[in-house]
Amino acid sequence: MSALFYPMTPQLPTKWLLSSEFMEKLMSQIISMAKRRGFVFQGSEIYGGLANSYDYGPLGVELLNNIKNMWWKHFVNDREDIYGLDSSIIMSSKVWQASGHTASFTDVLVDCKKCQARTRADHLIENHFAKKGKERKIEGFSLEEIESIINKEKIPCPNCQDFKWTRPRKFNLLFETHIGIVPEKKSLAYLRGEIAQGMFVNFKNVLDSVSPDLPFGLAQSGVAFRNEITLGNFIFRTLQFNLSEFEYFFNPQKQKWQDLFNYWKEEIWVWTTKVLGIKEKKLRWRPHTNEERSHYSERTEDLEYDFPFGSFKELYGLAYRTDFDLKNHMEKSGVDLRYTDKETGEKFIPHVVEPTFGIDRSFLVALLDSYSEEQVKKEKRIVLKLKPVLAPYKVAVFPLLANKPELVKKARQVYETLQKEFPTAWDDRGNIGKRYYSQDEIGTPICITCDFESLKNNDLTIRERDSMKQIRVKISELKPAIKNILSGENLSKLGKVIT
Ligand code: GAP
Image (tube, rainbow, N blue to C red; front, side):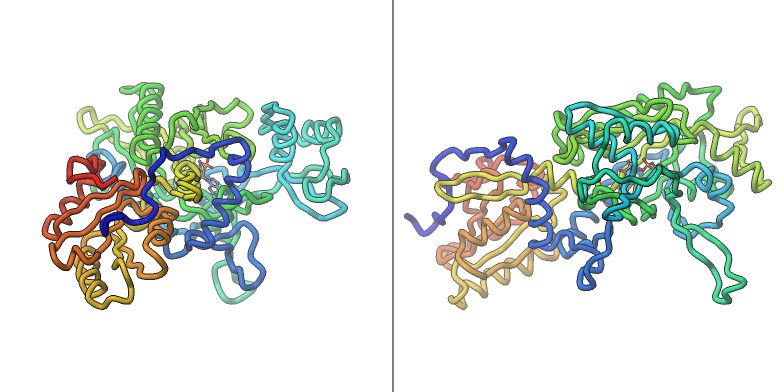
């Protein structure tokens, strides 16, 4: 083996292990990898954990920020018609009364009288039917109808398997908080249940300050809070979650909502498949039934992903909210929220189409969709085949041997130069093969090794994650070569491939 050939270069084609057994284990593999490698930790873990809350670790926060920043660039910075906002998380209770959330933002729950497990009745019923290979949605059903299905099907508690449910009852998802320090004078407020209301309550401020022409969008990224009752599924459904959404305001006399709805449906698809790189075959659109649609919507469709737990579930949403929100805020606040047509002077309340993107679900889908296990010779290789733009580190730099100071010195110089331009990892632990595999598992697209030839020739080995192919590149040409590989250039166009 030449000095330029490092272990783990495959001699045989790799074999995919995407069996149904693999799919069943996928979620637990992802959860364990996410903790082991510093993507996601259980919230408040040292105190036994807080249910449905998670913290992002050193690698997780990079991936999360990459998704958020890409979203902002794609939908706000790269467009002329969408403006950004950053509104407060704590909002007046009057906002949520006017928006209808205090009355209608509810789910139905049941408690197990034996083990005290609390669960959402719709999830209990849906999961029960999913196990039988059937799809059943019960949103919008009355409490009596829900109770009758649970009893007819004799659905057991998923926790203790007993059948001793309380009667179904409604609970509100809004997170209450209190403002003030004197107990008798505390006033009720809510942590925002959706970030959309920040756009509606600031509508007039935006008209007065930047005077946009219709149609235009108001976008926001931030955290929302919901008092969710759920039985796990990792970061899919949490108490606090990252949400990015925009309200696209338009004049209903000049544009048909159906046209805008279809336009944004297409754009959501482009974002998901082209920008995030999620596999098309794992996605589907599903229109909401009349019963399940939110109180503010006249049409809603969910973009669903085929999650390894319970099949297709909501990833993103698209809703035609009509003029429901602006009209209600105008009535309740007494402030004129109408838009004045700049040509005719006509005043009217714009209508809204709202694309909404759960960022934690995007994170989960990015991991699920890119996770793969390959057999290379006799070893299992775990690879996160993330699009380079999503990867926490773009490059990793190693000295071939950690106990040779001249190699370490040269490799450090390369690392320090690259670090200023790309998120770069340094690793000098274990052998070179282990370091490659370690970077593959966290999705680093490029590994660079400094060896004895580098000292003589001022060149390095670049190894590409997915193909595991390697080329030699002069240090002076390293940065453009990295940029080319990250933008999808074939390695063979940049140098002689060492196989
Ligand atoms: N403004 C519209 C709105 O909030 P939604 O369907 O209730 O719509 C938007 O939520 C997105 O937020 C969903 O498509 C989903 O991706 C994500 N989401 C909702 N509840 C969540 C939760 N408890 N944990 C994590 N993500 C959640």
